[in-house]
Amino acid sequence: MPSASNALFRKLPSIDELMRMPAIAELASQHGASVGAVTDAAREVLARLREEIATEKLRAEEVDAAVSRIVLAVQQHLRREFAPSLTRIINATGVILHTNLGRAPLSEAAIAHIGEVARGYSNLEYDIETGERGKRDVHVQGLFSRLLNVERESSYEVHTVVVNNCAAAVMLALNSLAEGGEVIVSRGELVEIGGSFRVPDVMAKSQATLREVGTTNRTRIADYEKAINEKTRLLLRVHRSNFAIVGFTEQPSLEELVALGRKHKIPVLEDLGNGALVNLEFVGVTGETGVAESIRAGVDVITYSGDKLLGGPQAGMLSGRPELIAKIRSNPMFRALRVGKLTYAALEATLMDYLRGNHDAIPALRMMRLSADEIRLRAESLSKAIGNAPRVLAGVIAGESIIGGGTAPTAVLPTFLVTLTCANLSADELLARLRSNVVPIAARVEDGRVVIDLRTVLPGQDRQIAEALAAISA
Ligand SMILES: *Cc1c(COP(=O)(O)O)cnc(C)c1O
Image (tube, protein in one colour):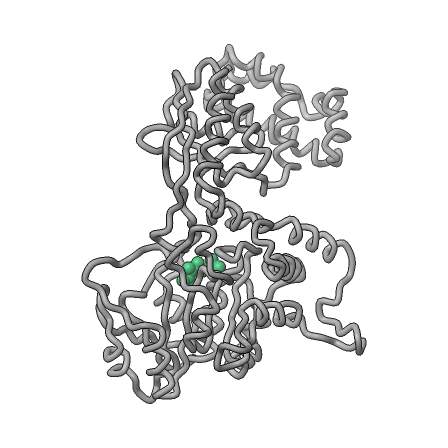
């Protein structure tokens, strides 16, 4: 080791000297950390400084300043270590069901019910009347049946079970109903949903053989019929969640698919993904077939997500014919994919909001329902508030919000955007500054400018955005 850096190393305190400093001793009580954790943090900070001196990342003249900041560095290290990794974010992207930002925010009722159920014991698998062991899936079975309102209209009584997410639901359905056999799918539906959920791969893992029919843009019912053989176990329809095929296209209707399945005694499985429980035209979403519609069309099992258009917790539902749902429930894979009490609590409370017709209580639905005019008023008042920040220029323009989460690929909602330009910061730098706010703010860039869509910003957060921009501008 060269003697020059030896001299620099000697400027660093020893771990014992550091631990004797009152400011360091105080850190343990501040962070609720043990003395051991503080010692570890101090060791790490010293090791990093040594490393930076050795690699000359820290120049000789900078060492004294770094030493004077050691207590601060240990404090920052502890703060990071004792802070949760999962943290709140303000979603100003205008993407309502943003998969990277946790999809649907929960309703107040759902949050309260989680708290209630989590705080103590519950009847998760306990029959209160008999005092005997019960089943966890009874808690939402009745609610789904009532909401899907199918008792009178459909040809069968609908049963529903819940697993961890829709990907799990699809895998479980394929494995339970088609293991060792063939599943017929149109080439126009061999989709990748994102997060590497690809229909052919899921099929392979479910031990079912994919039988592709038709072409990317056109598949006829006759294509399905020709592919049917003694090994066929299912006809699968996959919702084209995140793209649309337009132009010269053809796809058999659900009714045609169901009629073909009946003729050959082969069930139809529909992976709907988005899972609208009610007709969402009243919130501005058109062109989405809901779960009830599929049941009415006679589909035998439907899989859908809890945190997409339903607006509840992450979960995957399988709704369908009692005998098929019973088969799914008896698969050992179901036990491995089942959900916990927190999910049931959130789901049940969300379904109760639906049952009461309290759609505005479900944040995702309320956000979809916000009119462009309401958003314009908020955008103008935010833009005015920002007007006081000397270096940020704000304006309001018309734009579009996206529902997201693999729903209605063509569904956009008219909105108004606050445009932001900041002297001496590029759009990407401004985005990064917004992300580094105490409560990080996620926005997007359009035409080289940062834009804020208040549709997805919760009440009360508009002001936090204004404050963040004032701080950035200062
Ligand atoms: C989103 C989606 C899935 C996956 O749902 P997760 O709940 O994210 O697992 C599967 N299929 C379709 C058609 C989807 O849209």
